[in-house]
Length: 194
Figure 1 (cartoon, helix red, strand yellow):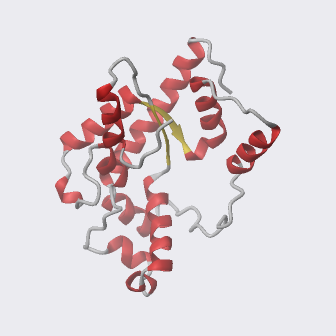
Figure 2 (figure 1 turned 180 degrees about the vertical axis):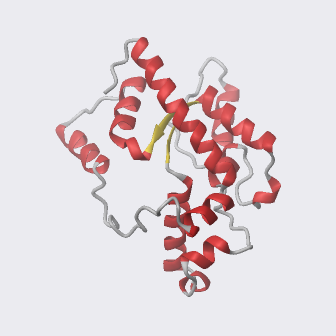
Figure 3 (figure 1 turned 30 degrees about the horizontal axis):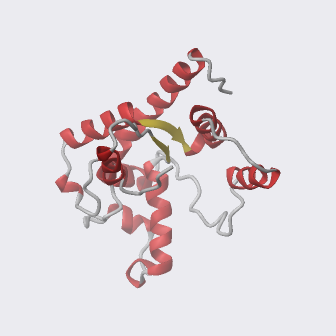
């Protein structure tokens, strides 16, 4: 297992050993929820954001590096502005997910982790390993509950964050469809899914 927040760079590891094929797995979060959560993290660590409201952040004309993060990451343009992205980049990101990834969704984390375990043949060596996995699956971590919570889809904040993350919103909608399609394929191939 190779872990990287820069998947394109990680894929280059397999160029030197073509007999090995890499398969990526991803757990994606609704991009508006992710952007709101990222804002709360920025508030904790950056004085500029500490004084800003989420409404100001969402409606600001200033592009943020974390806007459209999923699309930028998949097409190897991390940190660049959203203006550097194109429809071709979005289509490339969709194709990467379709061809290279087992897609998981944070909103369906139980089914996602089960899918990963079964697809990749992961097992637990000890009862402690299984317990650790179950604790993580049910989100037993020190900052649990410090998130912004759901934002109403009809709110101005949601609409502004969705507009600022338009590439990721479309990519996420595509990923939701892939999640459903991959689940059906895996069931048909005998990989039992809940």
